[in-house]
Image (tube, rainbow, N blue to C red; front, side):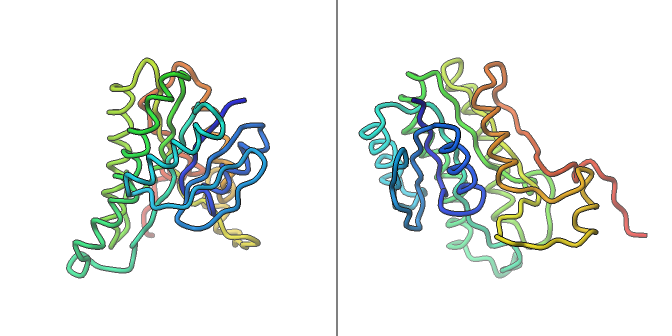
Length: 232
């Protein structure tokens, strides 16, 4: 039975991926700073993925319980978008965002790599459309996600051909339960709706299996980035 390690698995896109791969018959390790209960085919690891100890522990626990590692989804992330302008953003906040959103991805890849090589496995990094376009007061988040895109193609070259590495840049993915969207919210997307975590999980599943795809960034935003928008 194949095994996947997912960071940030308690809520949002990460939780959607955990649920999706469990339903698909995988063993799953979820790593998060929030507590999650282990269960059948689910190993829950409590820890901060920006710390190397957590990365080592997560991989070790995965191998100890399941005996193999076939895929890694780096998803854990934090944001300060809209909280601080450039002049107010502290170095501490900047480093914290990059630590979780970028350094954590590197650390997980570093410690998972030997086992992924054995399995001829894959890594999927979750970036963001903010790696490509911005809104105001998003410097730390945008920089971290841009770094994820660059880290992805660097890892793809370094770990290939044994391990394939790709990333997904989601747009608006609704992670709230029972959220309601206006018709305008839906129709502004060429796809006709707001995204859901399952959309990202399905794309990740494809990328894990796609043997001739590596080093790429896939935008999953319902077509929003292809719209030419000007104020009237």
